[in-house]
Length: 313
Image (cartoon, rainbow, N blue to C red; front, side):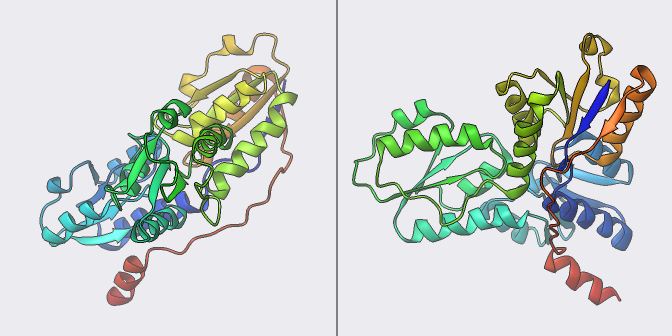
């Protein structure tokens, strides 16, 4: 058996920044430390922080007044920030800068009086945060059927924005439906789907046809991990998503000569290495690691954390 190891895979710059933020705060001020929503959508990352005493909450009211709270990489709505201020919380914003970009766009186009069509999954934390920037001007569309159901006049000033972790292919289907119904709907100045999502999808799209099976490491609530499995299947290569080696089923590998192994943007690299070692021991697998895209991207820690470190130096 040969393992094709996708590159890029795993942690993106936004995820690394968010995880580093929580770890540095644990090291700096200890616990209790509160994080609003899962810092990233990966079970292992969250459990490792829970083991260090970090508390994850889905309601700001659960955070004791005067405490420190970290906002997850997915971003939060203005309402969450207001509630945090009312509780006198020290806010550390670990929102991915590429998500913040979409928030800024939503505020800007709302002030311009445009109707915003927000392409994404309504229940995803990122979409909830972006929608909260201008709820009176924003309509969430999850499918071409949602677009068909819209009843805005054809001359409505309109722009579409997208969730950063969507499948490029799936998003384009919805965008095409928008353009058919509303030809004057404008696109954002720069693509909203983030570089890491695009690059990981591109690597799978390029490499999956060379494999008999694709294994994607990532949690079930990781939108970008789920999209990677779909993209592989769209190329004709079956795909399985797993959290870790405990979910591997060796029956999947019957008749499989080449396995494409990748990981969602919030999956730790040690999980990838564990799968490689398991396949080597079980099947005598060899490893091939072609580089499809070299990213070389880094994001600075949140300014609030940098200020805190200087104050405590």
